[in-house]
Amino acid sequence: MAPPRFPDHDEIEWLWRIGLFSPDDARALRKLWRILQGQTDDYLDMLLGVVAAYPALAEVLSILRGVDAEAMTDDSATLRHQFRQWLFETCRFPYEPPWIKQLYFDLAQDSSGQSLITTRLPKFRYTIVLALPLATTVRSFLVTEGGDQQGIEQMQYALLKAMLLQVDLLSKLYVKEGLW
Image 1 (cartoon, one colour):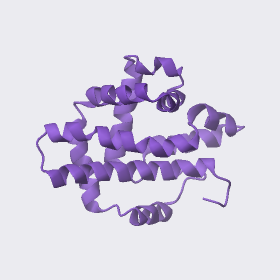
Image 2 (image 1 turned 30 degrees about the horizontal axis):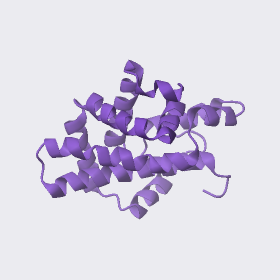
Image 3 (image 1 turned 120 degrees about the vertical axis):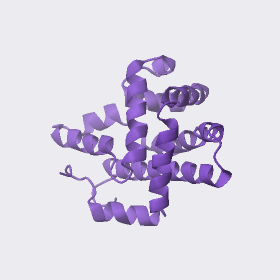
Image 4 (image 1 turned 60 degrees about the horizontal axis):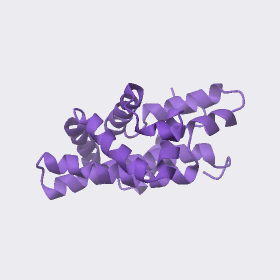
Protein backbone atom coordinates (compact mmCIF):
# COMPACT_ATOMS: atom_id res chain seq x y z
CA MET A 1 0.00 0.00 0.00
CA ALA A 2 1.36 3.39 -0.98
CA PRO A 3 1.42 6.17 1.59
CA PRO A 4 -0.49 9.40 0.98
CA ARG A 5 1.20 11.78 -1.50
CA PHE A 6 3.78 9.13 -2.43
CA PRO A 7 4.27 9.11 -6.21
CA ASP A 8 2.44 6.28 -7.95
CA HIS A 9 4.17 3.50 -9.86
CA ASP A 10 3.75 5.24 -13.23
CA GLU A 11 5.35 8.45 -11.93
CA ILE A 12 8.29 6.52 -10.53
CA GLU A 13 8.68 4.53 -13.74
CA TRP A 14 8.70 7.78 -15.72
CA LEU A 15 11.42 9.21 -13.46
CA TRP A 16 13.51 6.07 -13.98
CA ARG A 17 13.20 6.37 -17.75
CA ILE A 18 14.19 10.02 -17.65
CA GLY A 19 17.14 9.10 -15.42
CA LEU A 20 18.19 6.38 -17.89
CA PHE A 21 17.90 3.66 -15.25
CA SER A 22 17.98 0.25 -16.89
CA PRO A 23 17.78 -3.42 -15.87
CA ASP A 24 21.60 -3.40 -16.11
CA ASP A 25 21.63 -0.71 -13.41
CA ALA A 26 19.42 -2.83 -11.17
CA ARG A 27 21.84 -5.75 -11.63
CA ALA A 28 24.78 -3.44 -10.93
CA LEU A 29 23.17 -2.35 -7.65
CA ARG A 30 22.64 -5.95 -6.57
CA LYS A 31 26.30 -6.66 -7.35
CA LEU A 32 27.32 -3.52 -5.47
CA TRP A 33 25.44 -4.76 -2.41
CA ARG A 34 27.14 -8.17 -2.61
CA ILE A 35 30.52 -6.41 -2.62
CA LEU A 36 29.71 -3.90 0.12
CA GLN A 37 27.51 -5.83 2.53
CA GLY A 38 30.49 -6.97 4.60
CA GLN A 39 32.25 -3.60 4.31
CA THR A 40 29.53 -1.13 5.27
CA ASP A 41 31.37 -0.08 8.43
CA ASP A 42 34.52 0.70 6.45
CA TYR A 43 32.48 2.56 3.83
CA LEU A 44 30.76 4.57 6.56
CA ASP A 45 34.10 5.35 8.22
CA MET A 46 35.39 6.73 4.92
CA LEU A 47 32.24 8.83 4.52
CA LEU A 48 32.53 10.15 8.07
CA GLY A 49 36.03 11.30 7.19
CA VAL A 50 34.61 13.26 4.28
CA VAL A 51 31.85 14.62 6.50
CA ALA A 52 34.34 15.77 9.11
CA ALA A 53 36.05 17.90 6.45
CA TYR A 54 32.76 19.61 5.50
CA PRO A 55 30.69 20.92 8.42
CA ALA A 56 27.63 21.38 6.18
CA LEU A 57 27.58 17.63 5.49
CA ALA A 58 27.90 16.92 9.21
CA GLU A 59 24.86 19.13 9.76
CA VAL A 60 22.86 17.21 7.14
CA LEU A 61 23.69 13.81 8.56
CA SER A 62 23.17 14.96 12.12
CA ILE A 63 19.63 16.07 11.24
CA LEU A 64 18.94 12.70 9.66
CA ARG A 65 20.25 11.00 12.78
CA GLY A 66 18.72 13.43 15.26
CA VAL A 67 22.04 14.19 17.00
CA ASP A 68 24.45 17.10 17.33
CA ALA A 69 26.80 17.65 14.39
CA GLU A 70 29.77 17.08 16.71
CA ALA A 71 28.51 13.58 17.48
CA MET A 72 28.63 12.53 13.83
CA THR A 73 32.07 10.94 14.06
CA ASP A 74 31.20 8.65 16.96
CA ASP A 75 31.14 4.88 16.62
CA SER A 76 27.41 4.58 17.11
CA ALA A 77 25.94 1.15 16.50
CA THR A 78 22.67 2.89 15.62
CA LEU A 79 24.33 4.97 12.91
CA ARG A 80 26.03 1.88 11.49
CA HIS A 81 22.76 -0.04 11.47
CA GLN A 82 20.88 2.84 9.80
CA PHE A 83 23.57 3.27 7.16
CA ARG A 84 23.69 -0.47 6.43
CA GLN A 85 19.89 -0.54 6.13
CA TRP A 86 19.85 2.50 3.84
CA LEU A 87 22.51 1.00 1.58
CA PHE A 88 20.70 -2.36 1.49
CA GLU A 89 17.38 -0.74 0.59
CA THR A 90 19.03 1.51 -2.01
CA CYS A 91 20.68 -1.46 -3.72
CA ARG A 92 17.86 -3.97 -3.39
CA PHE A 93 14.74 -1.78 -3.71
CA PRO A 94 15.82 1.19 -5.83
CA TYR A 95 12.38 1.82 -7.37
CA GLU A 96 10.52 2.43 -4.14
CA PRO A 97 12.93 2.61 -1.19
CA PRO A 98 11.14 1.40 1.96
CA TRP A 99 12.69 4.13 4.13
CA ILE A 100 11.18 6.86 1.96
CA LYS A 101 7.79 5.17 1.92
CA GLN A 102 7.96 4.95 5.73
CA LEU A 103 8.80 8.65 5.92
CA TYR A 104 5.70 9.45 3.83
CA PHE A 105 3.59 7.24 6.14
CA ASP A 106 5.04 8.98 9.21
CA LEU A 107 4.28 12.40 7.71
CA ALA A 108 0.69 11.38 6.99
CA GLN A 109 0.26 10.45 10.66
CA ASP A 110 1.93 13.62 11.97
CA SER A 111 -0.78 16.16 12.71
CA SER A 112 1.32 19.22 11.90
CA GLY A 113 3.31 17.65 9.05
CA GLN A 114 5.94 20.37 9.15
CA SER A 115 7.46 19.37 12.49
CA LEU A 116 8.49 15.97 11.19
CA ILE A 117 9.94 17.48 8.03
CA THR A 118 12.06 19.98 9.93
CA THR A 119 13.28 17.43 12.47
CA ARG A 120 13.92 14.47 10.14
CA LEU A 121 14.98 16.06 6.86
CA PRO A 122 17.95 18.30 6.12
CA LYS A 123 17.74 21.52 4.17
CA PHE A 124 16.87 20.58 0.62
CA ARG A 125 20.01 21.95 -1.00
CA TYR A 126 22.10 19.42 0.92
CA THR A 127 20.09 16.39 -0.14
CA ILE A 128 21.27 16.81 -3.71
CA VAL A 129 24.97 17.39 -3.13
CA LEU A 130 25.22 14.58 -0.61
CA ALA A 131 24.76 12.06 -3.42
CA LEU A 132 28.15 12.77 -4.97
CA PRO A 133 30.34 11.99 -1.93
CA LEU A 134 28.32 8.83 -1.37
CA ALA A 135 28.84 7.69 -4.97
CA THR A 136 32.50 8.66 -5.28
CA THR A 137 33.75 7.19 -2.00
CA VAL A 138 32.39 3.77 -2.94
CA ARG A 139 34.91 3.52 -5.79
CA SER A 140 37.87 2.45 -3.66
CA PHE A 141 35.88 -0.54 -2.38
CA LEU A 142 34.96 -1.56 -5.90
CA VAL A 143 38.54 -1.24 -7.15
CA THR A 144 39.75 -3.41 -4.26
CA GLU A 145 37.39 -6.15 -5.45
CA GLY A 146 39.31 -6.20 -8.73
CA GLY A 147 36.48 -5.57 -11.13
CA ASP A 148 37.00 -4.16 -14.60
CA GLN A 149 36.83 -0.39 -15.11
CA GLN A 150 33.53 -0.54 -17.01
CA GLY A 151 31.86 -2.66 -14.30
CA ILE A 152 33.09 -0.34 -11.56
CA GLU A 153 31.75 2.71 -13.36
CA GLN A 154 28.42 1.00 -14.00
CA MET A 155 28.01 0.23 -10.28
CA GLN A 156 28.95 3.80 -9.35
CA TYR A 157 26.53 5.31 -11.86
CA ALA A 158 23.76 2.94 -10.80
CA LEU A 159 24.25 4.01 -7.17
CA LEU A 160 24.22 7.67 -8.16
CA LYS A 161 21.04 7.19 -10.23
CA ALA A 162 19.33 5.41 -7.32
CA MET A 163 20.30 8.17 -4.91
CA LEU A 164 19.10 10.87 -7.30
CA LEU A 165 15.74 9.13 -7.52
CA GLN A 166 15.61 9.13 -3.71
CA VAL A 167 16.31 12.87 -3.74
CA ASP A 168 13.58 13.31 -6.34
CA LEU A 169 11.10 11.36 -4.22
CA LEU A 170 12.09 13.38 -1.15
CA SER A 171 11.76 16.64 -3.08
CA LYS A 172 8.00 16.16 -3.22
CA LEU A 173 7.97 16.75 0.53
CA TYR A 174 9.75 20.08 0.11
CA VAL A 175 7.93 21.68 -2.79
CA LYS A 176 4.52 23.28 -2.88
CA GLU A 177 1.65 21.01 -3.89
CA GLY A 178 1.21 21.04 -7.66
CA LEU A 179 4.81 22.07 -8.42
CA TRP A 180 6.38 18.64 -8.16
